[in-house]
Amino acid sequence: MNVNIRPLHPIFAAELTGANLAVPPTPEFVETVERVMAKYALTVIRDANISDEEHIRFSRAFGPLELPPGLDRFDSNGAPKKRIAAELYDISNLDENNEIIPRNSERRRLAKATERFHTDSSFHLMPTKWSLLRGHIIPPVGGDTHFIDTRAVYDELPQKMKDHIEDLVVVHDFWRGRELLGATGITEEMRRTMPAVNHPLVRTLPYGRRALYIGGHASGIVGWPEDEALGLLDELYDFATQERFIYAHKWRQGDMVIWDNRCTLHRATPLETDDYKRDVRRATVNEYGPERSAEVVA
Image 1: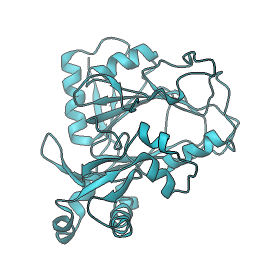
Image 2 (image 1 turned 30 degrees about the vertical axis):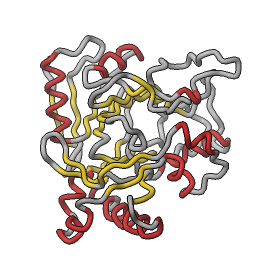
Image 3 (image 1 turned 45 degrees about the vertical axis):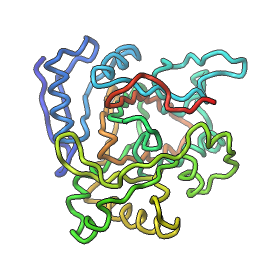
Image 4 (image 1 turned 30 degrees about the horizontal axis):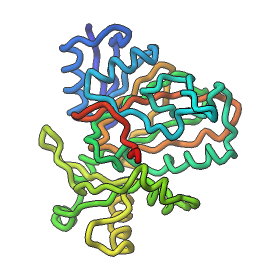
């Protein structure tokens, strides 16, 4: 398989062309993707017009799947939903009948939290690695995704700040992150399904580079009062989200975008219309461990 690599941004992100994801990935291709990801942290594979099953097979070549929580995978009669494969996250504006969910609905409103920069699964104890998001139906306008390489952000921090944050541990809490953005009605039962977890603020990647581990789910610092913790986290967030660090991905039909959750942030941009379907489907892989949902089941 002859593939070509082209940088997409001065700091990170690359385009990979010439790959055929409809066939099982060879060890050589897996090694190529791993090498490109270590350098660029985000890889766009063009023309990945593949099935859900091929998407899942390709993703498993890089680690065990993190399975979607069961909260939204069953209909009112207890039957599994059939719109996409159960192993994939449904990141679309479509309901179980493949119809557009109105943008002013409660369901779409809750998804607006993804418009703040975050990293997938930072609120899980499982060792998240990559997300692999495939563009199944892409609207003609809107729905871009923005990305940040937090390795580059860390490199640019003043040394005084690096020393200050070196040993800090951050609380990542899915529900508290939603509350800080104005969500209400979160119950103790909901919190128990995804309890808060702690992660180092500065992470070292397997190949030695260091990165900030922050974003929309970061809601506290261990041992700090909440107001002081949020003050520092907001300062780091504001520094990281400077325009110079952002790659804006404009989706094409068939794009497979892979990003490293350990060292990138991303945010959705709104699709401010009910005129177009947007169907994108995500696999998330972990570094190691069993394939299971991150949801805590009582």
